[in-house]
Length: 80
Image 1 (cartoon, rainbow, N blue to C red):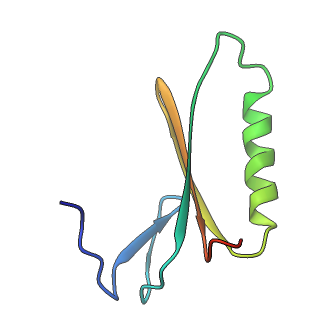
Image 2: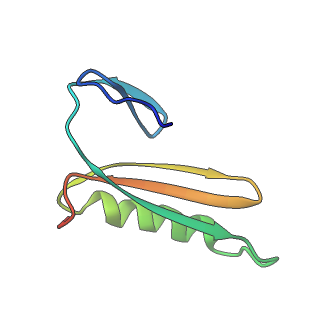
């Protein structure tokens, strides 16, 4: 069973804990795998995060990479 979310949950965005009153949000989950040629990957990932952060409703992004990469972007609503 997953974690129970209470109104004062510690939320994580960009690895920073924020103790805030809970407000529902939406997560877009993106997974990827690298090929042998990763030229330009870091620059494109940075550009993707920059463009997302300029959109209305953007709350934050978390990323992790090992053999598989995962990025979670957080949004205020489904319309954002």
